[in-house]
Image (tube, rainbow, N blue to C red; front, side, top):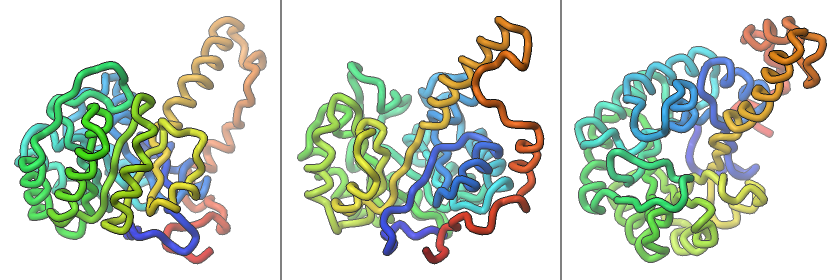
Length: 284
């Protein structure tokens, strides 16, 4: 299991994946962990990211990723899917499917994706969410639980975010996570300063693309997740390639570099991973 505590070389770095093939690419690239997020999986199914993906569907994707890679798997458990019982079920299913760590947020059900701006939001009552965290802790075996607050995204400010995260830490979780988007990005570091040293912090810096992972480590962030870069890059690259192919109806006219079929075979063959690729928990 990948510990949430920061290693000597800095934060663990994860990337968002949504199937076995993207998990293979992440492992070959040398990432420390795979992130199975609701945005990525919703995009895979062609659904809005609004709690439409169920916990059994997420568990199925986790199993697929687990079969394709040895990387530790962090999973987005959304808001627990609506109740304490559904949250407990998700924790049990995700751990059985191969997840090492899950992240659960205090968004009310049904959730709005955190990166959508200009929307009013409701959060789960803080004490009710503490109860939910306790239920999930009771349901797990070795699964690590990270509590995430949407207080900044909801417009409640730094004080509320800190209050909530302190209560979540006291509930016995293994790590903390504070979410920001483009409207509240400047509030991230004040929260991190207030809570440094309380518990390991996990962070997804989508709204701060100019900040390097090592810079977050100064504020106690132990795990940095580049959560949605794969699907966002797919939108640009694949849309361009498909448009060119449809217009020209000729493979040689596709302008972007295209991998030979042999490279696809190589990626699919787990024994083909170069020995120099960093493995989570290895030295160096």
